Amino acid sequence: MLKEKRKFLLALDGSDQSTAAVNYMAAMLPSRGTEIVLFNVLSQIPEALWDLMKNPDYEDWAAKMSDMEKENLYLLKIFMDQSRKKFMDAGFSEDAIDIRIQNRVVGLARDIVAETKKGYTALAIGRTGTGKHTGLLLGSIASKILGALAKETICLVVGQPDPRKILIAMDGSPGAMKAVDYVANLFGGSNKEVILFHAMRHLGFPFMMTGDASRMKKIEKMFWSEDQEVMEQVFKDAKARLFKAGFKAAQVRTKIVKGVTSRAVSLVGKVKTNVYGTLVVGRTGVSQVDEFNIGRVSNKVIHHAENMAVWIIA
Image (cartoon, rainbow, N blue to C red; front, side, top):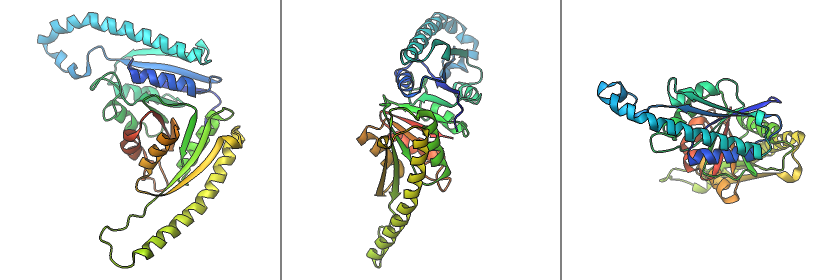
């Protein structure tokens, strides 16, 4: 459950994706009762050259970088000031927005992780950063952060998401209901649309199956029917929580699809085709190791994501 006072950490690096993350969060988050920390870990020596700088032969070259580092810091401060203004234009007070630029202590990912663990409502990062080896890259910095923060909520922004519609992945698990509660507490009373979405996977018959295939299909239909009965009650509970938080009936819909080969791919497809810019998933699903855990989300949903923000709720 969210506390009345909310505090969000935005890890920024001055890239286009950081700009998109700022635009999305400024439009998405409620300005009342919300604090924003715009955070940057300043690595004065590029990551790839960190060890090389220990070689005395590189001292002259390192000195020549001094002017470039000063210029980068100057541009970063401009970027952070512009980011703060975007939040202020969205209704946030200047006092609610804090800019923090710190020198690298251990490493980009570990420094962001350390800051995130200081009690934030969520961390927001972009999927890509300033370049192929220096930004918040999935598979590099961002993937390290995703793996290290097991008890924190993370929002990974990909492209330029539309903040008006939210899709919550539902599977009947406590993790999915946590996602519902998070959305209810953060966005209740807003004009955002919500869809509660559940995908039933194909049971996966063997390619060279022998015997009565129709019997197996009947079993699959029975499985889906039982699953749907369970999910109807789950949807009823979820909608009650959303309504109690201030959502109106017209703002909340439910959807069940059957026979998908991958829940992750079906989620992304639903978001793309219906312009749901926000996808919210619980950290783990009913089996604790299925599609909605942090590893599967990062490897399947996030890699397929386009112009969406994926919220992984702890």
